[in-house]
Length: 487
Image (tube, rainbow, N blue to C red; front, side, top):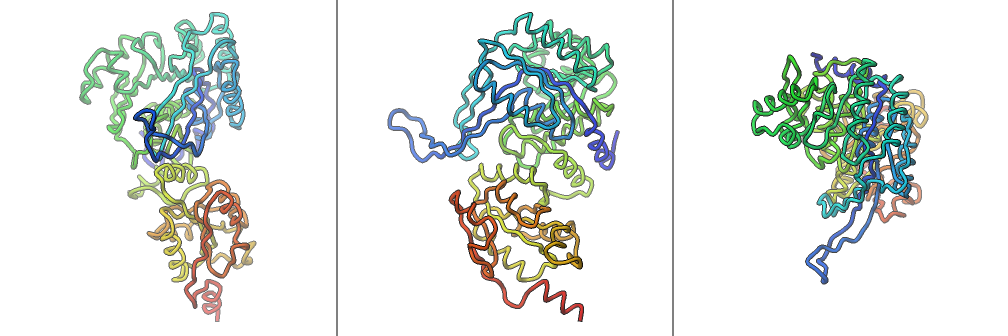
């Protein structure tokens, strides 16, 4: 079993993985709105829509998570001849490390799940879908495409959402082909008959699914292990990884049992966490990582995803950070993040109704002026994000003798301040790209600027945000401090 340091190296190995995903792809729509009154027509809330977004769901979300971990993916699935099917093709095509073979089934409704939110409260979910099994001819096309792709992949994922793509004959033939090629098969199962997954290397039911398939008690840890062993034996499956929500996971194999404690720190949304587990397992197994360490990576990734909003992903940097935090026994969330990870965190905050503030700078030698600027900026918002110039950027702006402290040291000092909620290092000379990505509600800079000279001011004001010029503490300057030290 790998220790924390070894797990970090495993993430690097995962980036070499190539995984074949076959299953039910769907479009997840998220409609965000504001509720201020009850309808006079019926006792229901009136939701004024403020934002809409769409992303890949189901087998598509497994694919997104694999790509986020750095793995390459071959995806095979089915959509209808409709607008949603076109959106799925476009979203899949935007993933650089993904090769997709999406077959159109005339007359089929592409699966769409539309969730309506006010803040973090989900008001309603509306499903549009066709669940009839695909025809034998279409199943044969899927099987042929999968067998071709399997030759270059290290593992097979069957993502079964019961929408008709993974028919029993197709499922059996795909498992047989993968096993003949010596490739592990990871199944996200559906329904109460797991015999259709006979020959799989690992299946990932949650506790409710395990209870339905085994028809056994699953109310205790011992009962879960007994039910998982029953499934493995009766259904001819090598291992069962039972996801147990806040209680963590249980990996039950032929010769070992491992219980993994949940890694979530703050839960925002559990939707899609199972897809993250499957993706991390498959990527790890595809490069030969043993099942227990693959499960540990999956557990870390799942803990990250439930701290985000919507069908989110766990980026490789997220997982590495989680490993480092455990290794150093650091409490809570890290404050220093990549732009993608920070974007997910900001989305979660915004879903809670938080006002997002942003400021930026080199922050080479933190002095009382900086501390006051950051404190006053934080007082004007609920969450303050600080964009920090990278070392190369500081050199271009300040000269070759700067920075005095490298970007890691500067980020660590900023992150230690109670007024700072998030630090993001950027390589450009200005933070314009970060401002466009994060869309802050408030942009803060020192009062030595004017609004028309603040980078991003026009953008922030354009989407209804505010630009604040913060009064500076006199007598404090990094440049002046360095000059005094050099005398």
